[in-house]
Amino acid sequence: MNGLLMRRKIVNGVMLSLTGIFTFLTISVLFLILGYLVYYGGRSLDWHFFTRLPLSPGEKGGGMANAIVGTVQIVGMAALIGLPIGFLAGVYLAEFEDRRFASLVRYVADLLNGIPSIVVGLLAWSLVVVPMRRFSALAGSIALSVMLVPIVTRQTEQFLREVPSTLREGALALGASKWKMIATVVVPAGSKGVLTGMILGVARIAGESAPLLFTSLNNQFWGGLTQPTASLPQMIYTHAISAYEDWHQQAWAAGLVLITLVLVANIAARLVLARGISVPRG
Amino acid sequence: MVARLITLAFAAAILLVALLLVRQLWIGSAAARHSLGFGFLRSSEWNPVTEKFGALPFIYGTVVTSVVALLISVPLGLGAAIFLSELAPAGVSNGMTFLIELLAAIPSVIYGMLAIFTLVPLMRNYVEPFLKTTLGRLPLFQGPAYGVGYLTAAMILAVMTIPFIISVSRESLLAVPREQREAALALGATRWESTWQVVVPYAKLGILGSVFLGLARALGETMAVTMVIGNDPKISASLLAPGYTIAAVIANEFTEATGTIYPSALVELGLVLFGLTIVINGVARLMIMATTRKGSRR
Image (cartoon, rainbow over the protein chains, first blue to last red):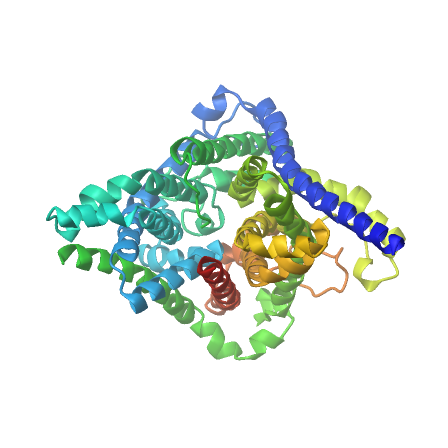
């Protein structure tokens, strides 16, 4: 009897410590990644990185100014397309519940959210690149906006649902129309959460590379709305798989810049803006 | 009324995008579907020069890397989720969950770059030779140690799926009513016994949902895998061998695919991948919905 109790206690101790070790291991991966990026990226990051165009391997002092501008263009335009659509669809799901249709939209949005990003790239390729007969920043933006819409829809819905129904009833009791109630009471009350969701969504698509492979492609020079355009994720990819040491250095620098952008957006959104509200998973 | 119609239109746009996606993949793969038929899914030869297109090596690579990845990430992720929901004080748990969410936010191309520069040499010089000397008799660990291949891709996929498994499992575990734990402890169970025999079974549907969600992520993951899989359209029993996945072959070959059948065959591969992830995601979402509903009813 005592032996059995002993065994149970040992199993208890071992398994509970294992769960702690697993947690520690997982979190240490984050710091390992950040450490590598800061160390190697920091060594190769200089002012030229932000101001100059990429150079051929072997030449010193190139930068990725075009990729930084390109990422801002592509992601900015994707946000312009995707955020309003996602927001309004989210308002619909939260405020106008038609049981069947709303749950269908919700389910399809979740499925869209899980579609491999490379498949979204194929969609944008067939819809934009083929008719335009050229790779373009616009095609990349459309691919990214397809990924953004379901994220923003679901987050908007979640946060608007958290607005207490007494606020809605108060507004309606004062004689506001439903439209007025949503615009002046519900959305402002849920605005912090909605904004958080939007920032997280944009941060997520900003790091996407697969949907851009055959939409915005890449460019060693400045791109444009209807031109193939460089972006940071694409540059990291092409530079990291190249065989040149200087290009690897540039890839590290680009990795550091990209992760800084993504993490700053995440931390700002989750810690500052969304203080005290729980962010649902996309 | 107007507001309803406007927002309804945008909600309907989501359905439209989904339909458009299916339509474009279907039309885009028409040439390959007509000329290759079902042989496409059964053939394991991929040679664009002779116009031989078989999907099997890619399907195999996709499934093998994802399954091996989950064999690593499910125990780790479930363990960490148990720690975060059952043991850690709420403040610590929230802080750690925040860090894990950040891990999920890291772009896939950065995982790929780090894998190329750190994991691949590590695998080539230490892990793979070690596996060969200890487990080399198994067909799983034979052949030269390249550093790139199924196992390396699976490792990186494991790291990338852990955050999803942790956060969804943690939420399902947190949704288990307190009384369940208290009852088990009152009957004399140890902390671990109450967790493993009562709390985890109670949340099993949600945990299974998290596994499927992770599986869908792993199947469709592109950049990180493309950078370390080795890009060899062959089926090898050994996990150390280079292979290929569906997403990786589309990423590598789509822009250079010429003719009509070749790009169309790649789109058909995209269709296969789409189908796989839709089914798995569909099941996962239903499971997760079922547990959260159960939790809120308590």
